[in-house]
Length: 243
Image 1: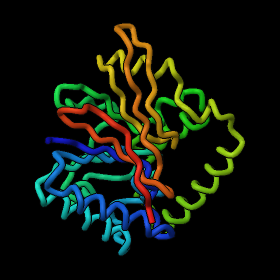
Image 2 (image 1 turned 60 degrees about the vertical axis):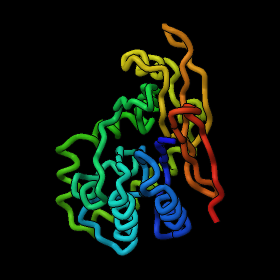
Image 3 (image 1 turned 180 degrees about the vertical axis):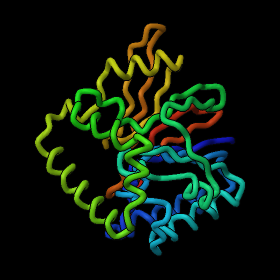
Image 4 (image 1 turned 30 degrees about the horizontal axis):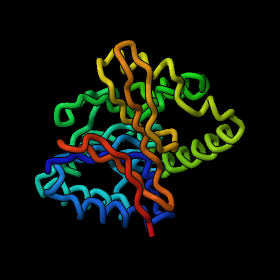
């Protein structure tokens, strides 16, 4: 039965090698079996540039390359932690970069794909940072810094983000319902798949033309999360243990 997979928010980090091991297992299991794997952002805890060729990063790239070489398609989308992922990374993995807000046809069901951070419009402070960090000028300035300098900057940004998020209200950290409806209506879909919020669930969405579904991937911790889409059962959200 043809099927496709979706994952996000792995936050791969050398301090948590079990997540990379779990990813390698997932890739080996589905290589040559699934039509496509979509990685919807925050694959890494931080990505400071495609020239960061640490052994950990090379191990992840090699795992993706084996998967792509098996014949399964591979797609990446930027998250709020790895917005500096570039074409060189995607090419090394054997995959392609997708724009935020891409619509894909899942065996007759169109679905809108997003990382999800742009949906959190109540978090105005973050949205200002997002606009800055996604600008070519800012990214060019960041990538022009030496690797070690970028590592220090990334560490400082993570600590600053953790401190700010600890004091934010729960509703600010989640998606804005009106923005969800707007995005789905503009895209002409009844299914939205995203991550970012770390709140895995399936939500009904009241749309102008009926009821839609918002599929939310979870972050990888003690559990990993995936969405499976196939030609018979449709979409389903699943979790699996990470040892």
